[in-house]
Image (cartoon, rainbow, N blue to C red; front, side, top):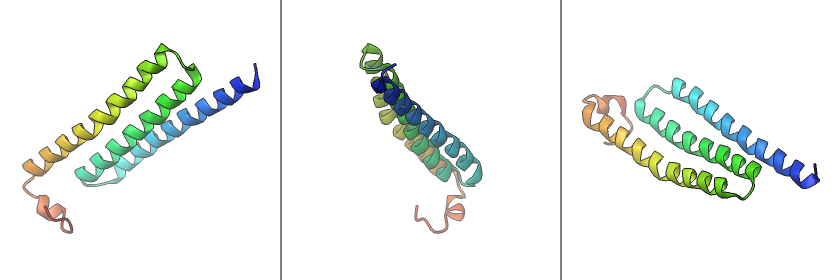
Length: 109
């Protein structure tokens, strides 16, 4: 095993570890927040960043192949779909929750 392979292995594992740590912190944060819009913001942000770090780590471990092209397509799909889905869920919450003004006293709706 050459030094370049060892560095690539370590870098890939670091990216995967940071991604897993981000997702674990998001799970803890989702249970700590009380309001659904705060939970959605945290889940969407950390989910996207966690998946990005994990997939970048897998790309580093795999090298430049056709598989890495597929992984990068997955990253682009997550970056495009996650914010849109989160926005739609939050919009549905605002439209259907009649007590939104009581729950968000400091926020103008």
